[in-house]
Amino acid sequence: MDDEPISIKCVLLGESGTGKSSLIERFINNTFKKDTLSTLIGSFSSKIVFYEKENIKIRFDIWDTAGQEKYRSINKIFYQDAQVTLLVYDITQEDTYKAIKDYWFSEVKENSPEDAIIFLIGNKSDLYEKEVVNEEEARQYANEINSLYKLVSAQTGEGIEDIFKMVGERLLTEEFLQKIKEENNANNNRNSIKNIMAENTKEIKKKKKCC
Image (cartoon, rainbow, N blue to C red; front, side):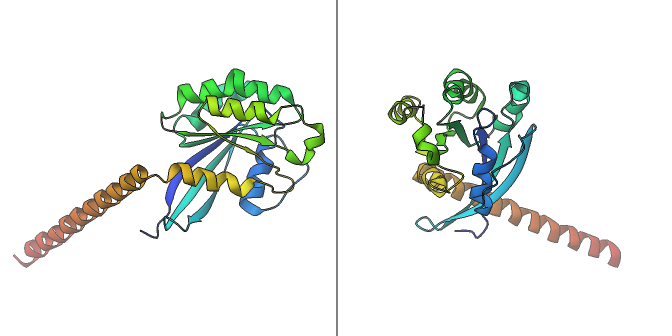
């Protein structure tokens, strides 16, 4: 397999205060910042993950979006072509889970590619004693919408790496790998044609000079 990583666009959606930015910070830098400013419109980061079984590198191009209602229409530009969508709620705030069911999921289904991977994530599992969103109910909802599901904690790091392991397992199917192989072959063919054309152009220029 080519050493060049496969680029996958990933977007985080959910209400403000669910810890989306902290989740990304934990995944990218393995650090946690207790006080973070709300994301305005969107922020970008990326990380390469190596999947040993398939001998493939994936570069996750991650977009964090604003959770405030006034930015909802702008958020569409981020998730329209995202191959992976992480729907994040706060297990201690029932309204953030309700917003996933009432708004965010339908938006993703309407505006994302049909084969996009959806991942429902309950953040702040370290505050389990304050949990108000029933885990089993959330798991059942994830099954209903054909979504992956994970409880995580951006503060402790619990479950964060598992998110992208599970995404890899769902993503790296035989069909997907065949598609990548065909795209690589097509790119190689295009490069070969470009090289041939470039060499022919050089020869033509040489002949013009010598005559």
